[in-house]
Image (tube, rainbow, N blue to C red; front, top):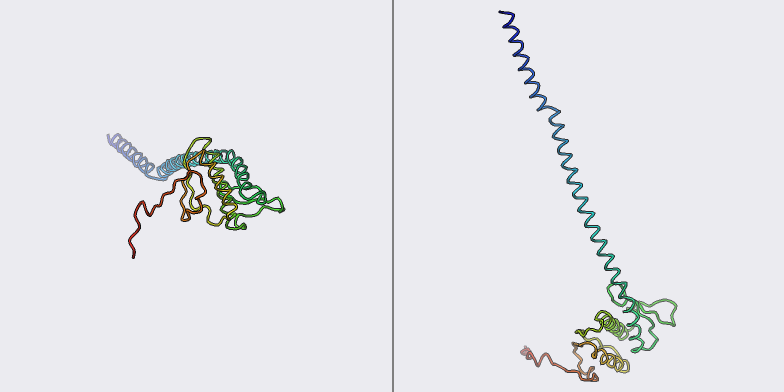
Length: 212
């Protein structure tokens, strides 16, 4: 009987010991390793998701950039050619062809008598406003594609000499047959040569501000 009791006690102690070892194993390095592995797995999933989102953003950016470049490339050539034609009518062939940047701002001209293109800021004030006007009218003509829309111009002829001014007014008259021109200016007398132009004095319409 004593032997059987001792055997039961040993079996009970063994069971308790196994239970303690199991608890220690669950709470020990193996458990920490399992938690670390699970955390690593979650981080890998998050990194993969971030990479996927980044790749999608990069693809969208590249696609939009390529579409924009394609659209600009399809328009900029006709705009430059038309601007060159208009500038030749205004200033003769002396200023040569017009080159625009990707924002359709005039960047350079290429006079025939010079070996290298000339930056726009190296031309006179009158020439600069004539070049800008030629580009804006050309851009409107190319983009509108025959649709009658409104083109707004703001004091475009403050430094142009009288001879070229007459040529510009003739071009504006032609442009007004294809679109509506709205010109803001502090020098309305310079536009009196326009055919069928209607003049509005904003100070008269809204009333002059009171004197100080």
